[in-house]
Length: 387
Ligand code: MG
Image (tube, rainbow, N blue to C red; front, side, top):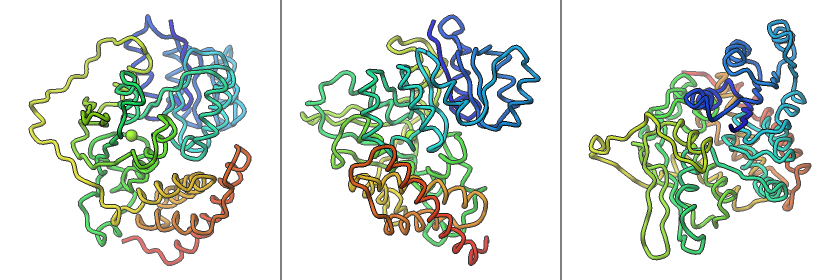
């Protein structure tokens, strides 16, 4: 039996992971569960999966949990989540959103647990240092992102020397065909409806701005050690092809599957075994698959990410932090959709980078960027009127 801990078990990915686990009760046991604050869902999960270790971010919810489960040890706050992450497990799934996932993930890595990483912010902000941590700990890192899991499965079969380039597909999100003027009037309610994937709030907005795709370029660079100029993005609205890899001999491999996160989750959980799943793809239904280059003028987030990634140092951490704050402000109705990348661009242009950062410098760039972004958001909010 594989012992699994899920950090962020009440979010979209976490719940999908538990669904896959419940299909194979003979294969997995849940060691630890953590949630930031969704206590009701967490209670149901504890009843069903009987973890040994539980943590909840919000301290007052911890009191309620302790009363509900008097014999269970309940940890609270950030340190509590870190403690559960650091318990021995065969695999720790990291589905905490944003930089809040950093410390618990490091704690899991330093214990020697293998990691399934659904969080991309950590890898965007500190890719180089993060990969050094993985190497030092000698653990396995599985990318829990549909595109990267696809690339992982293709590259497993080939020598890195055979690789020419990788192509990451993007559905384009809900607004790809809108004009610049129409984009300006989008509200958070419009943006939370993704045409293909059902996901958490932050990643849904990141998909709509294409920042998510930009971040995936950065994470692909670090995960697979591929040069920036050998990573391409292509818009593919049907989201059936998740990634393609071109070999030096001119042959390309496309990774095709239904757009369902349970597939990459099952692949990683049962790795290296393959087991049956109810998912299946009727290829004949997809008589039209389209691919076209992204419009980086209309969606500059892609360009911003690539530039921040290539410049390196603390630039990606700055972009990531600024984006987290700007997306939150957009969700709160304080700024318009455009303003997300405009603000990020402004923060990046003010940044004094550290070129060879460790975690300390990355975290200090992160807090600097959050503070500056909040100030700029307040100025934007004064003149913003939602339409
Ligand atoms: Mg993805």
